[in-house]
Length: 193
Ligand SMILES: [Zn+2]
Ligand SMILES: [Zn+2]
Image 1 (tube, rainbow, N blue to C red):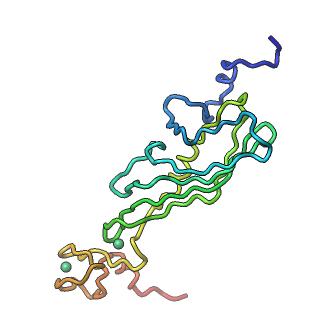
Image 2 (image 1 turned 90 degrees about the horizontal axis):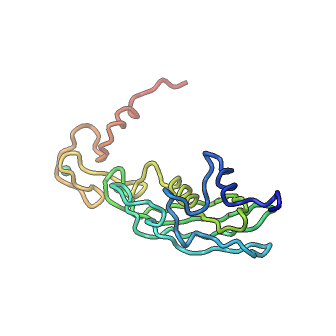
Image 3 (image 1 turned 60 degrees about the vertical axis):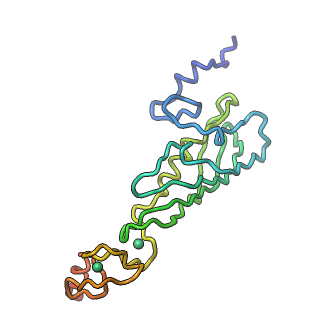
């Protein structure tokens, strides 16, 4: 056996502890839609378009986000020296719960600049699943409003004030129906500098 020839075991040992195993390892989600065959790839690379369900990314709905639709991917993978470079975009529309009125409304998740490099591992297929999962996960908003001027819920009867007014008396001077307690702070007069 030539000295440069590496066995599969060599590669497994070379993987750094914190490195991502791009092969189909245990513990990682792996979608067949995001596994790219790289053998004989043309120099200009190949484009990958499609949709992958959230369940393939091991992402599930919770009380704030309803992950109904798929994640659309629009990617391009190209060989660059001993690596493969993946660039492109991800997009999904999920139903998100409004922080103010608790109604669900469409929320667009967008990743505009996907960028990942993968080592050429003896021409083995590259699994993009884990990185797509991480990218889309980071695109979820920390806070969400169904609309810019969401009126929220009546603090007394709980009615969604976007759908109409109720007969409750305002509890304080704040008669614009805004029940956010922090408004008290914003109404305080601050010393102007
Ligand atoms: Zn709302
Ligand atoms: Zn009310």
